[in-house]
Image 1 (tube, rainbow, N blue to C red):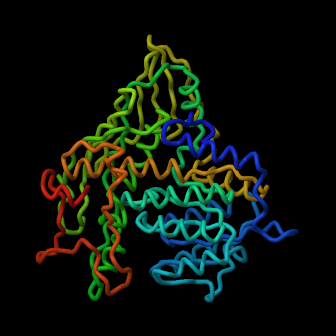
Image 2 (image 1 turned 180 degrees about the horizontal axis):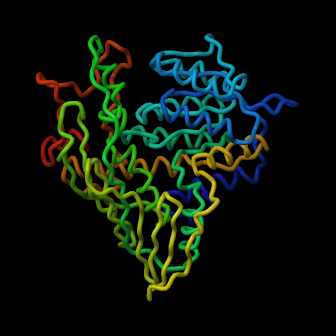
Length: 436
C-alpha cells in the first residue's frame, strides 16, 4: 500500500487511515503478558491450509484455536494435515470445530486474527462478522462476487479503519519485491506517465469435481464452486483479479468504463457450470489510458501470466516469477530486478501482518483496494456477458445480488440446471438486465 500513490476513489480512506495512525497504535488484542496470537480458520480447502501454514511460519507465536467449514470432510482433512505438521500449535478440540453455514460466527469468537479462505461469495458476510467482533483479518481474493458484495466490503473496511483492525488481502503481488520495486519507480516517474498496458492470465483451467449420487444442488454447486458465479464470480474475478489489480496499482486509480468480449469456446460441458472460458476487456481510465486485459482457460496451448505497460518515457515488464524490467524510450534498461533471494510473497503478506499485530501496530487496510480490484473484474464480467460498455459509476448502483435467498442444504441456488443437466450461460445482448 505504501507504494501506491492513492487518489481518486481512495483519497477519502487515505485521510481516514492517516487520522487513525496519528491517534496512536492499535492495542494488543491478546492478553497482557502473553504474546500468543490465536487464529481461526474459516474455509478449510487448499488455500485455507496454505494460509494457516503461512501464519504459522510468520515468526510470531501463533496458535490455531478454531476452524469452520461447510463440509466436515474438508475440515477434518485440513486439521489432520496441520496437526501432523505443527503439533500442539494446532489446538482445535472437537468443541471448536464448526461445521455448516453459520459455524464461522462461533469460530471467530475464539480468535485474535481470522483467516477468511472460503469461496469469494461468502467473503462479504464473513468479513463483516470478523470486524464486528473486533478481529484482525487476512482474507483471500477476490473479496466479493457481485456488486452488492463489494459495497458491503467497502462499508466494513471503513469500520475496520475506525477500530484500527489490520486487514490484509491475498493479492500477494502487493507484497512481492519485484512488483514493489518496479512500481515504486514508475510512480516516481522513471518512465513517465503510463498510457497503456496489457495484463494476462492465460492458462489451462482448474479442477472439476464430478457430481455424486445423493448430492443436493446446493452441495453440488458448493463442491464445484469455481463454476458458479454466486460463489466464484467467474475466473475473471477469482483468478484474473491479480493482474487487474496490478493495472489499477500501476495507474494509481480505477477505470471509468469497461467493455469487452468473452465466451465458452472449449470448456463447454455441463460440468463447467455457467462460467465463460475466455475474456478480453479494455479498462479505460479518466486520463485516456487504456489497459487491455486477457484471461482464458484453454488446454494445450500457450500460457501467459504477466503484465506490461507503456509510458511517455519508456515501458515496463513484470511477472510473478520475480522478473521486472524498465526501459527508457530508446530501449535502454533503466532498472532490472534481481530475482535471487526474494521472499515468497504468500509468506511475506502474513509475515508483515502478524509482525504488525504482535507489535500492536495498525498498518494495513488492504480491503479497499481488494474491493475495487474485485469490482473491476466484476464489471468486466458484466460487460462481456451483456456486450455493453459499462460505466464504473453506474455499475456501483447495481442491486443484482447473486447469493441464494437461503443458505441450507435443501435450498436452491438462483441458477439451476436445465433438464439436460446443463446450466444457463450468458449470451451477449440477451437478458441484459439480468446481469446489470
